[in-house]
Length: 101
Image (cartoon, rainbow, N blue to C red; front, side, top):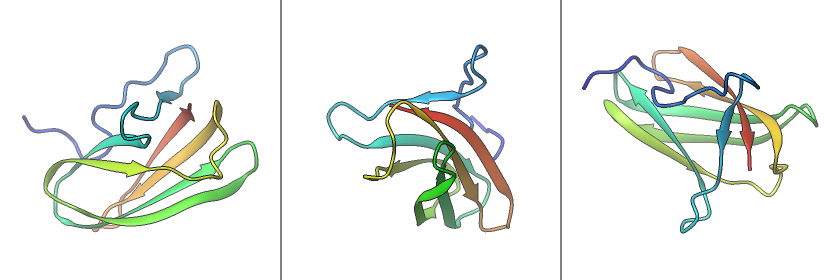
């Protein structure tokens, strides 16, 4: 299937307007699906809404189609809101308000 570029599988909680994420039980990492229309380096940033600070910045290679961004950081506060931003090779910015658990 073909999807729009961005966080194509993220289903937003209608009560909180956030995307709820949990670490994968076996790999102990957060896994976020995203879709790319062109290949290249993708920059992700994660900002704590509580502390108002950057807790992770990472650039990863992205392929055309579906991809998975795996991440974790000691600075992530479990159960609190964070903003995940993705900048694609063509300079487009996508953001997602999340609650990381």
